[in-house]
Length: 244
Image 1 (cartoon, rainbow, N blue to C red):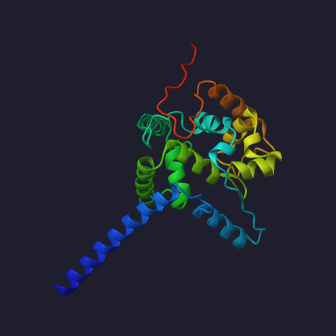
Image 2 (image 1 turned 180 degrees about the horizontal axis):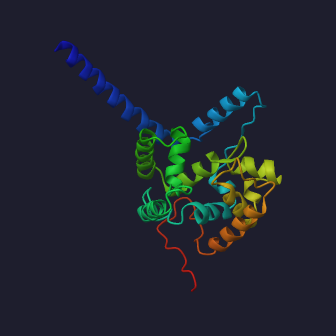
Image 3 (image 1 turned 90 degrees about the vertical axis):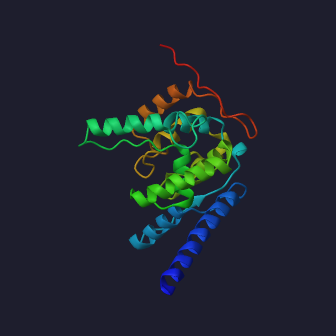
């Protein structure tokens, strides 16, 4: 009985330590820049293992130092309801599940929101296990509760992989377009967003014809996305109505 009681106490403190440390981490990242993520370290480890040159380009900048067209482009491409949902787009999840059921042998459709991708990039490791997915739901809920939409977008645009060894808007702007993130044109923002499903396969520096088609589609979709609100502004905006 003493052993069982001791194990219960240990488990209790493990649970307390987990929740305390994760909540404190999320609160801290509400204010401080995210200079490195688990994915960045994993990619470096892969480069070392493969004997290739180590490349990790990452330059944190404030949201105000990123082209206002880039949040619009990634919303149009990745998460049309970002400003209105609370971390999870249940309508998109239902549609993805239905498409996957109807076409079981084809590539699986996903419905991860920008909030989910941010949680995964900053706090977790790549993978598709149910354990990792459970942690993703937990951290997504935390950042939606403790961060503003502007902060989620700021962290997302600074931490997401945008090319081989390239992370964030400032790094991809310098590496691929020889400019700052603030100087990115609307067209280039759409091109960067077009690569996000697989930035190691698709390049914004040397876009294929497929990428150029995706870029054009995203530019059209951007017309129906409202201007991304500045820090402190209300984010509950309805998207512009498409003309039929």
